[in-house]
Image (tube, rainbow, N blue to C red; front, side, top):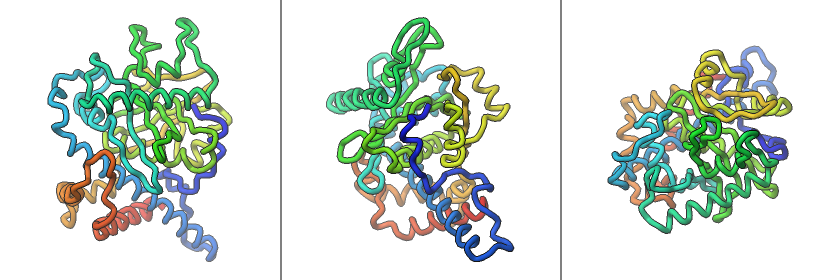
Amino acid sequence: MDSKSEMEENISNSSSSSSDDCPNPDHTETPQRQLWFLKVLGFALTVFASFVGILVITGNAIKRETWNPSMSTVHPPHFVSRVVYEKLEKMVGVRIELDEGFSWTLLRQMDQEFGVQLDDLYQIIECHSKLAVARIVMEECFEPIKDCNTKINVIRNVVYNRKSNYTRTNFSGFHSAILEKDDEIISVASVRIHGTKLAEMPFIATRESYRSQGMYRRLMVAIESALCYLKVESMVIPSIREKIGTWIERYGFQHIGPSLSKEIRHRNTLTFHDSYRLQKILAVPQAFKLLQLSSFLSSSEAYVILSLSSDFGNSHSGFPLSGKPVFLLVLFLVAFQEALLHC
């Protein structure tokens, strides 16, 4: 469900992988060729950002591999496999630096029932404090939503991933993805992963003073990178009729296909009256698979390169852009090749 004002922002770099986004360069005039090149370049930059995001998340997860000795005793929700759940839990609370001073973090309410993954009390308190601010941001952007039978506040229960014995109001498994700058929360999205088949994102909101500045795009790219790392195939969102075109044209979503529609019927997903479901395919780009398997730079070598920085994996350091120009150049060239294949 999209907040009305923010959806008016103009996103220049769409992350859609549809070939319709890039016109055929053959037999076109010079301006059209220039437009085609710009679209290819924009697509390549988007893919490149996804690559970097995937590797940053992977590196942080590797660093946190032995952070919590009790990980093996934590039981994942029934709708998520242990492999996905353990990877997801290692991401919780890790602050990942982005460009221009932005950062994003995946949060959820911590309690003993679900297993506390952050063993530092200060970090747990900080996590809960940020969730409280995330709830405020959501409530600024959306009208109150109450369940017709139980009268519970849906947004509040989603943000705090509240569990219930009733399937319809069971919001366990939800995580809040927050976008920050200078320790100020700017955008918030609610995400719940249902195994590797799909993840749902019923809410995404941006504070009023930051709307129409590309904040949706920043947070969406970060979330998609995380889902790609977890090998989730599709993201599903609800949208009002008036915003369907915006989601499709600017964000690369499409109408849900029969196979995913069947999958959704077997899942407890959140939907709303008069809303329409859309999906975005999140399969890891073929170029990233080639990067992992190439003789020039295997996946293990990539992780070794990333680990050479003593700061890498620190929750406040982010990706070591300096000192790795050759690696980043190769990564961008592979991304550009992927863009050419799609265009």
